[in-house]
Image (cartoon, rainbow, N blue to C red):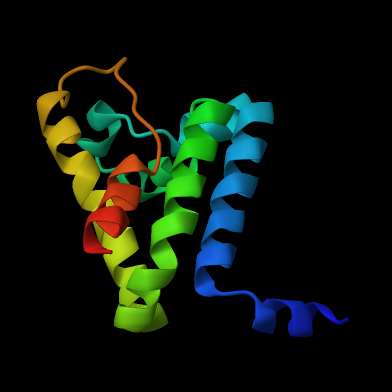
Length: 129
């Protein structure tokens, strides 16, 4: 089976989950990458806005990652069937970013504060199901 055939059989949810798992695993083994992707509100306040999104692709440990991916796996297909691929991904990415906004505002002046994980985006999927 070719790679193209495999990709066609996978849903957007599976590809999203795979990207989160792969980035998390990579970040666990490359500390510089983890530090570059973490939500650091202080750095966001100084223009590193990408952190509002990238932090949703890394997780603190295996339990954190497994719980989020299991919840996404259970609830995402229902939401995907209703919204379609494009709007599902728009909702997921928007929720990932918006979930970090309160934390960013609260800890804007704390250079050592960091946050990570897809819990906000996954919660949005769960509550949309």
